[in-house]
Image (cartoon, rainbow, N blue to C red; front, side):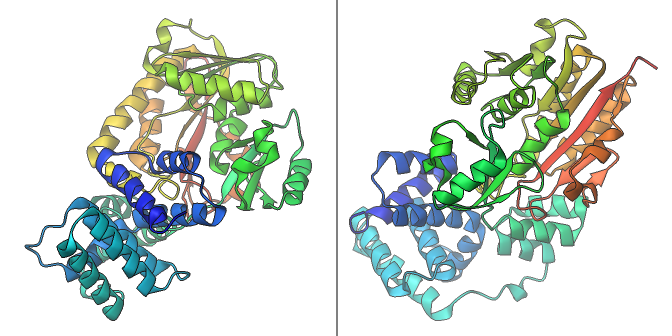
Length: 451
């Protein structure tokens, strides 16, 4: 890209995320598609955007050390300083003087000489003094929150639930990228053959220890692989693959996927069913339903019947005991996917968790009568908060004596997970620091006759 254009684009993306609440991964993908960006610049753009977001609170702490308390920075100026300091502290391929020079030039383009002078002064001071010592922050929770750029309320909440050590490990893991994983369309290609072809295309890959259909991509842009473009692969986190895997549908079953978009789990269910039977897939909006249908078509799966419907109203659409299997991959705070979507940790509030736990419980209440006796229901979320996970499960079981946590759930978990620190009587909590996956919770219920 021409001089300064790359970092101007980075700045634009960061401002849109910060001010308009845009999702980082979607905006990055939009920019990469819109502009003709060389592979090396593509990697750098992604790295700076994600890295700046991941370390935002720490970078603000650094900035505030060098800006007078009565000096208010315009949002774009603060973001320019954040992305510049991130590069100075965490990237080593571009020398500091080049980073400072580009930042000053961008400040001149977007502002005036006074702003450019301020940007130059702050960055020169940061260059001279280096990273601040956080030992002066005596409160360990506050220090951890700043060091790892997590809101203090969130760190306090996790420490209360899991203790300091687990929380620290989780916060540190959230600062690092995790490798992308994909699921093979097992009706069209075997995992070993897919791995062989990917390696021939120059990818570095390894088999997932969690899913027999999973492949971890350690190096290479999977979006450009011929297997992905031909509909033989689906991008899906390894932990997410567990939901369909543990629901264990078989060909010919009637299966309900209550909160289905964008379709990764619904298509996985159809693959496990060998494209025989029916998967009823629902989500709130028609736009999301189109994503499910497009994904099913790409993967050549014909048993998915997708339509827009609030999961809390499915009782009006289906008769009691209509389904052999039900998946409730519930809407949640997303606090388990911070590694891939770092903006989530700044956009969520404690009130969101309480509100979402009510929605999760309402969905379970609605669909519970729809499962046949002897049928199985998987409840899953991509969060690590007990209020959305074990507490929802506990409350559900108290209200439904005809349901229990399926005892075979624990013995059927992949060997890698059976000794996990997150296994409890209410299910499996995967933490992001454990297996190079998202944070994820799941449990499988079985329905018996009323006791």
